[in-house]
Image (cartoon, rainbow, N blue to C red; front, side, top):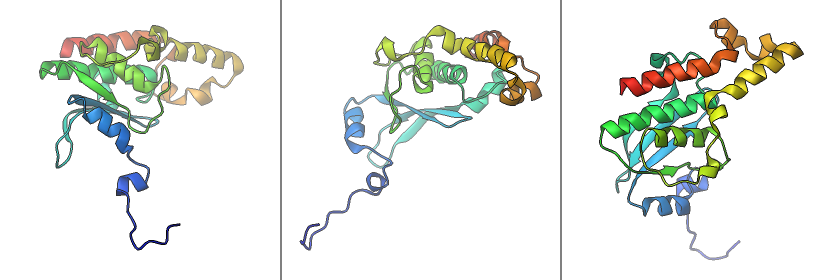
Length: 193
């Protein structure tokens, strides 16, 4: 430890590990609107944010909880929900005249095929330009939820189906048909906007 009388105190958000200012500065230097993705177990929040000196301004925000309006009754934190949330905010952004964004994942780790990049795929499919590599995007089977359907079939054979898919059973949803639910919700999102 230094024996100087001068001590430099870092920004509060940097001390708490809430903001990586180097990464933020690189994103802000692009002078583009940011696509901000924040996720939890049962929800995904996507925002389009504009930088201002006095604080960022949220232009658009969509939560995966809104997907109930589009007949998406399954879990709101899974990969198909992330894609549909991205598609929804992308169509709304297109309506507002937004054509280009830059991705801001914050302190989240960049994991190939994750929910964060499923949101990105939804935004791109809505017609918004976002710089990316196609390698990081999840494949179509995972976006449609076929991996969930396959896991449901395996769980039925193993005998733990009722425990794992109890929320689906309560809502009278068959997880083996999640791809069909996905296509219906996607058509409603594309038709509504």
